[in-house]
Amino acid sequence: MNKWLTLAAATLMSFSAVAAEKVVLYNWADYIPDTVLKQFTKETGIEVEVATFDSNESMFAKLQLLKGKGYDLTIPTTFFIERMKRADLIQPIDKSKLTNFGNLEPNLLNQSYDPNNEYSVPYLWGSTAITVNTDEIDPKTITKWADLWKPEYKGQILLLDDVRDIFLMALKVKGFENNTRNEDEIRQAYELLVELLPNVKLFLSDSPKGPLIQGNVPMGVMWNGEAYMAQVEMDTVAYIYPEEGATLWVDSFVIPKGAANVEGAHKFIDFVLRPEIGKIIIEEIGYSTPNKATVPLLSEELRNNPMVVPPAEVLEKGSFHNDLGDANAIYEKYWQMLKQKQS
Image 1: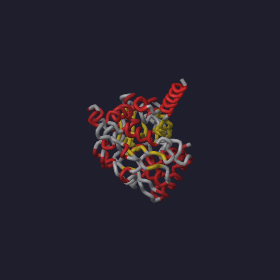
Image 2: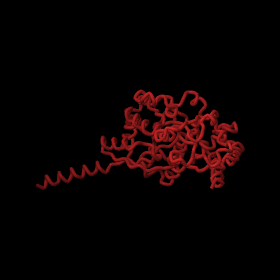
Image 3: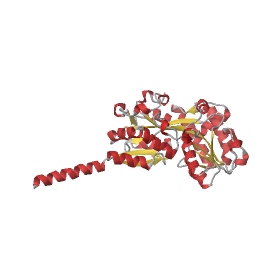
Image 4: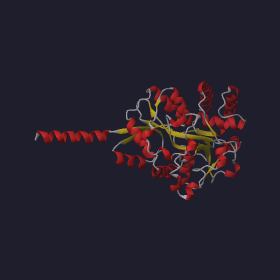
């Protein structure tokens, strides 16, 4: 009898251990479908607990404060991977555990911010450009970043709460390079952004599509996936790639240095790299997929939607942000000055 009681207790403990296993994902809001999380849990028994951040800067600061602990996965944007490596906040990824790594588009791998993808695996990629409600604004009247400064748009624009994406607009209008470290050029961009403030109704990074859908603003600077999700809600949405060049970016999985469930993190990454899972993600949230095996599974409508698959000329004109080392502090100084003026 004691033998069977002991076996039953051991079995219950085993079940409890499986049920208790989890992966903690630190992610952008609305950036992975619940159906994907539930399917992963159903197949593996591993729960996915999601915490959210609204900017790369806040995510980085939180991980620094926690010394890389508290989360098993997070999803920084391109140049922040390099910054997180330097701060010793992330650990190498064991690609031998990623059976689906070969599905990734080679052109998005082995970039300067992470040679050989030692620390990162692309999740989604896309652009930052101008989104308008065509019921209120004729999209033909907006072709470039400089158009946002037109006085008729007073109090009508939403801007991302993102220092580098917003400074890119002004730097491009001034004819400067978006990765400049020259403080005089950065100052000139700041002064131009101060001139834009009368047109700005709010800064927002947490679901910026919301104010557009709700009719609070007729236009905004936002990511292509947010524009796509707005278009799903209302068919009067246009996404405009400015003539001066849009921001391009890749968001990638990284494993924080203090992750408690490294094995589970690898399992989750590999699960997301499956072609059919990539299809679910793109259909629901509309960013561009780095998974070349997913693209043939998409509908012709999605493959031909420039919000989801940017035209070649957009890629040619677009710019990726680099990590700027000490010059980051210059941008942050002028960004805080700008925000104070806006408030």
